[in-house]
Length: 214
Image (cartoon, rainbow, N blue to C red; front, side, top):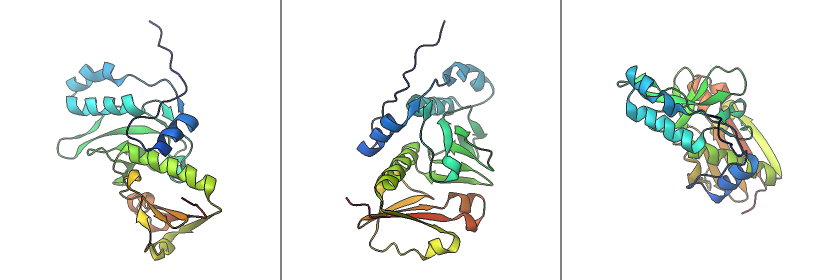
């Protein structure tokens, strides 16, 4: 039986902000996604918990096959959001791939035991509390790049000297290692994932978007 037609125009999943829904629908492309449920019996037979397979399948239903514009860090992020076979153990917890990298890298993108979206480098490093948060961060970065009058990149130790007093965290990105901050006519993104995950403090980076009004 032939595969059913997949519209290249995605629909923004419920629960996202209006900005992120529009970002997904205007800038995203939906491609064919693999049906991982057809592997369920085989994976259960290999000792994988059925609940973890169902969790990966739920990710695939919501995000599978979605290609989004490049992220401003992490070499652009996953090329296409796409789950695969869960890996792990009862003791360590289970995770699954969130999508393949765009370029050769020292880490991959995964969804962790608690649903966080992060990178699997020398250690598991959650970036956002959910994949929704990752997509929200991409949408906010696109918004900030479009409207900001200036963009300043700060690297390494200088990031720790940023004065965030008067700024409020942006809740929709669900920041863990990576956070966004909103101030008067400005936005700041702080990317700590590589610095922590690779034990490389020189990779710490912040982007300051100035001249962004309400």
